Image (cartoon, rainbow, N blue to C red; front, side, top):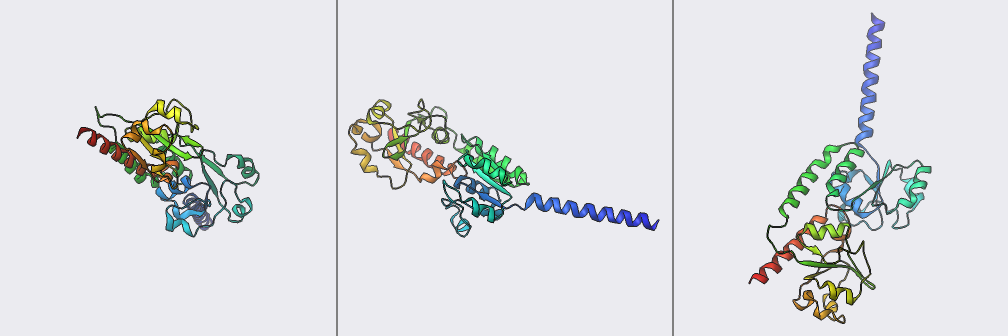
Length: 280
């Protein structure tokens, strides 16, 4: 009888130890974020304290990421990554996919988030939280995200302006269709004037005069609105004639993740302002 009690006690203690160990492994990660959008999403869904490495470009949330070790930019410092002993590496849209074979050889767990449109953000947030062992952590972010998006849905019968979004000025590069920034324009209530072009095409003045957008959005650092007005032929474009050119924090546009809602909101507000002025 005594032996049975000892055996049962041993089994219970062992099972408890294993359960605690599994729980610890499930919720305590050592995360290396390879790109700013991944970092921002990790913090937004509650895994910020488990991020032990970030890219050189990660600057948000500023205070939280400031003291975290940096592991490279387009070119990763593999030696440093290994030294930090991450349990998982998080990428977005395959920016560092060329390193995948190296990661495999080093037994580093690499995951890639696929965010091509605004609709993918809550889905990938939930998937990421599940991979990291606590799907519930993403619930608050997803709920708030969906609420904010629902508030910004295009009002019925509202005029939909055509929008040209420029992501670089030399050469002039714009937002085409079928990408995250195209979906931001549409989610804000606009129409992408270059949606028939794929990805991020290099454009010229003739193309813009044909597209003749109602609004121009500049999405790159130190964008100069006045220089746009001085480009040959651009003075005849509706957006320039009506002085409807704005610059938006490029990080909120080019990084597929939580802060896209800020860009959507700002574009939506500008569209409403334009519509109000037209009515007046």
